[in-house]
Image (cartoon, rainbow, N blue to C red; front, top):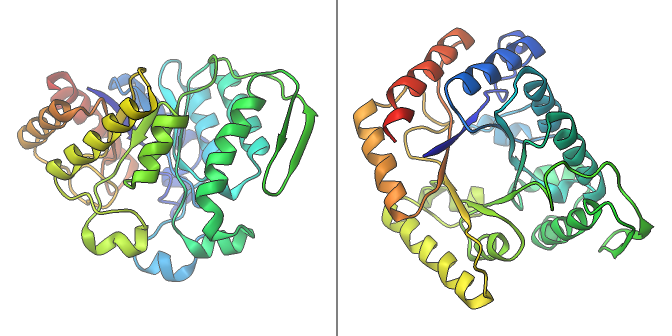
Length: 305
């Protein structure tokens, strides 16, 4: 099993514990040493106080944080999890991704989703109800920009005429794109426009807040994968789609590490239904404890999965 490890840069208080260049560098190097395929960071540029009070979180700018991680490492991949493309003009996003891919030697994975926090869209001046269309448009526009050739594109709110964007990403034809979300539309987006799908465990009670269907059991996940495979067949897609899941018990909402044996069994169960990689976070009260947890995972979990 391949793993993408969340860097806890959503813990912005105290900044010096988690969010300095030295802290990010140490954590990224630990992930690389432990055999992680990737490190990832989330994206919340301007959350509202009500959401933060209900368990939401801040975070660093994803491209800045991943650039620091890139400089500190040699192999580990750099994943946005999830950057909300609808927040931004797609050509600014394309430039940020291409720059990070160039300076890292071709290690970027673009994890993206439509987004769900209406107040953040309002604060950024983006129409919330357009978020799905804007996400599809952004992927199409970014792919053209990454070609390095002159192109024209008419967007909903912009026009590019005979435009060129250099440098190209190192990865050809583009960095892999993974689509987050449990909905049918997210799955169709992954099949039709991307390289992977990033479902997440989601209780039924959180459907209204997260604006994504519940996914509470492995059977729920199996059903969603069946839909994905059916859509691949319907559209004629033959290339494999990465399925990157967040296992229950190793996510950013837990405050203790799971026991090794049940987690190993759960990973094997997920692999059997078609999961190809796992996105994990490791809870810890301090950076020193987090580094120990990464070492534990690299010794006790990864070699057995």
